[in-house]
Structure formats: structure tokens, C-alpha cells
Image 1 (spheres, rainbow over the protein chains, first blue to last red):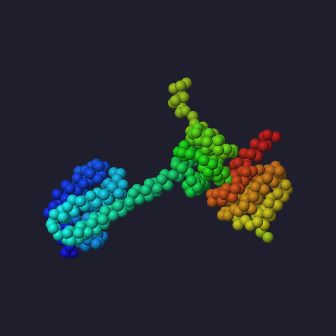
Image 2: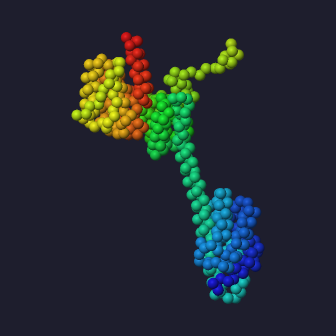
Length: 289
Length: 124
């Protein structure tokens, strides 16, 4: 590694100078997009500090090695914080690439009049920085993937709660778009819950369903038919005015399914079917009487 | 040949399907049930299919036929204890058994039949 012995030297000696150049470069390329420059400067300083011993001992070809552990850690940290603040992977990688100009200038100064040595130095530095930049991109993408997959599982968990409103009355508040796969899950969990709790009446509330097209309507009707086959009655509630007119315009026939505008109305119907009534407490009646 | 037993309980007939229904068995049940309704003057029929894992389109249609036949003979039919998987399959097959009354379990089915038999008696 005789060719790259200038790199650690520069990192050690010109650290603060490099950092200043780097930050100026960043400010120019990202046009002040990076949020919280103080934090970034701190992170960049740490990175340069960690880079120095790594370059000195480590193999420049392989940044996966143990000597680079600290560098990777800091890069991951930078990438994560910047991605969370809304920077694209390209912008995150640019953070690292921006160090090139000040670093190359320093290398140029160091090698003096020897163009061959300079070319070699720059080639080595470029290789290293490219790897580091790619690494941050990778981490940035991974961070995003983690966010996406977490949101997906959260959505599935959120999507199918079957709640018990009263003895023998279940409610299924549907939220989000209904596709075939989700309807299948919804249908199954509703039917299982009907069997488990021995409920006669299930209220399907579609307040949270943004659009109802023919397919969604068909899915709903299937669920209602399946519940009826098992001996439970379904009431569909939470039909907003626009959705009501959409259903009519589409020519969907909801058949003899009981539909109500709000969950409260549907619950009232369910209570009536179950021969139950809500009455004011004795105290309240006395006050009035 | 195996036959599915039909039990008489007051004005009701009870059928509990405990074995896998194959087509001949289903046909035999339909015939037996029709004769039994007439001979016992039954007012209602309860069919418990909670033990059935598989209900194909034939059995599904047969349940519908039993219900229609019974209605002609002035007897209500209620199918009880259908499993979720079976219900989903039937709906996917396009068989939603429009003429058949359903209940979650035998107890609720009996309540339903009792109410409807009493209701029609009073109407007379």
C-alpha cells in the first residue's frame, strides 16, 4: 500500500481543513437542503477521525473488514439520520462524495509535481470514497425498506379487528382499500369470530373505506352471504352519501342486506333484533319526571 | 347402505350429519326426509352440519332442494353449524342457499324454529 500512504497523513494533518472544505462543498451542492448542519458537521468530523486509523491499517479494497467497523457505524448513523429527515439516497451518497474535491486538492498539494503519484493517489481515494458512498446508499435504502415493511405489517394488523359491541353483536370496522386478498382475511376473521363468540349479528362498518367499486361491493356481498350461511345476519353501516350514489350509479344491487348510514343506527337495529333496549337510568328519569 | 338417522322431537325433525356426505347418501337423506315429514306431520326440520368439513356444490344444492321440498310440505328448514371455511367455499361456488334458513348452533336453530312454528300457529 505504498501508493496510498499519503491518504492517512493528510487525514491526520489536514482534518479540520478537509472538514471545512467538505462542508462548503456540501452547502454548494445540496443548496442548504441538509437539515441541521451542526449535527452533520459533528458526524463528518467523527467520520474523518475514524477514517484515519482505518485507512492507516486497513485494506482499502475491503471496507467490510473489522478495521472499518467504526467507519461503517458512523456512516450508518449519518445515513439513517439524513434519510429520516427526508433526503433521497442520491443526496445521502452526495454527502460522502462531496469530500472528494477538498481531499483531492489536498492530495495535489501533497504530491507536488509528480503527476503519476497524484493519479495513483486520486485513484485510490476515489475507489475508497465510492465504496463508502455506495455503502451509505445501501444503508439509506435499507432504512427505507425497514420503514415500509414495518408500515405494511402495521397496516395488516390494523386492518381486521373484529370487536364485540354487545353479547351476540359484533362489529367489523373496515379501514382502507379493500382488495381480494384483504377481503379474504377480513371474511375469515369475521366468520371465525362469529363462531367463537356465538354472535347472531355482525355490523360491517365501511366508514373508513375510501372508494366502493363493483369489486368491493361484490366482496362485501360475499362476506354477508357467508355470514348468513352460518346463521348470522350482517348489517352494512357507514355508507357515506357519495358512496351511496356511486353504488347506485354502478348498478350494484345490495339485495336484501340491511344498510344504515351510521354505526349508531346499525347498532340500534342490532339491539332491536336481539330484543334489547337502551333506557335512561332511573335517576335521570326521576329528574325529568 | 348407510343412512343418516332422522330423529323426531315434538313437531321437529332432527338430522345430524356425522359422516362425510357423498352424493348417494345425500340423495337417500332427501328421500327419507320427505317421507318422514309427511308420515310424522313434522312442522320443521333442523339439519346440523357442524361435523362436515367439505360441502361441495352437489350437497349445497341438495340442502336447497330439501328446504324447498319441506316448504311445499309446510315445514320450515334450518341448517345449523356451518363452518366458516364451508360458508366461504359455498359463497365462492355461487351457492348462497337463498331459501334456506340458517343458525349458528343447534340451540339457536331450535329457538328459531320454535318461534316460527309458534308464530304460524298463532296466525291460523
